[in-house]
Structures are given as C-alpha cells and as structure tokens.
Length: 179
Image: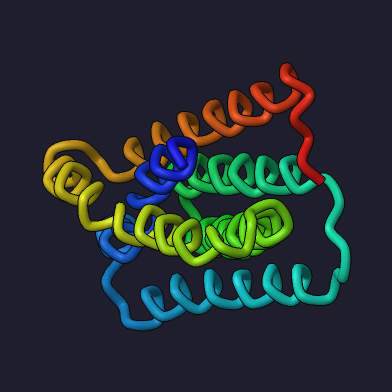
C-alpha cells in the first residue's frame, strides 16, 4: 500500500494537469483537449482488453512494475516532446499502462488475500489509488503555477520509474515473487 500511495501521488500530475499542460504548451483548441483525452482513453481500453483476454497472467509483480515504469517513461516523454502528435503517442502509452497496473494488482489481490479480508483490502486500495489525487493536487496544483508543468511531468515520471524499480527489487531480493 505504501508503494501504491507513493506511485499514485506521482501519477496525479499527469492525470490531473494534462489538460492544463496541453493548453499551455500546444494551445487551447477544443480538438487538442479532445485528442488528449481520447488517446488516453483508447490506450486504457486496449490495455483493459489485453488484461481481459489473458486467462492467466504470470509474473504479476513484473507486470505491475512494467506498468509503472511504462507510465513513468511516458510521463517523462510527455513533458519533453514538442510536436503534439508525438505527445499523443505517449499519452496513449500511459493509457495502456493504467489497466495493466490496476488489473494485475486486482488479480494479485484476489489470488492472495483471504476471502474474509477481500472487501477491506479492495476498499483501502480504492481509497489509496483514487482518493490520493485530490490530496496530491493540493501540492502539484499550486506548484504548476510556479514551475513549468513539463518539469513536473519529467520529475514525477523519473521518480515513478525509480520507485517501480525499487518495488521490484524488494520482491526479487526476498524471493517474494507472487505469481
């Protein structure tokens, strides 16, 4: 849960500041903001389809790590690229990663948590993974008025990547591969 809290704090800027970033960087045309949301949604749908068609997902910790690293690298690229269509490719990529993270995490919990604890664990996970955004934005929102959003995306993306590697290393070092 500590990893989830930390990770979703770092995901908050890309999730909550992307429309403001598009407006400030590429313009305020409705089509720009529409494509920003549309490409993420298409990516998320495809990531969800991938998870749903695989009846058995092996190496769940690796997949969760892959999803967070992929998200982090996409956030870095989103902050650094200039042509809007290239930005959209990375927005699409971050969309693919989210259901891989959440779907695989849900499967991992369902396979390893006793039934009598399942509701409590999922409740806490939902509170942590979605409820953390408003709290994180109390920091990142005002920061976006002082620091260029691209640097917020780059720094949170790099931190997310590092934390994901540390998360995976912890399981690997203790031979705690939960598959």
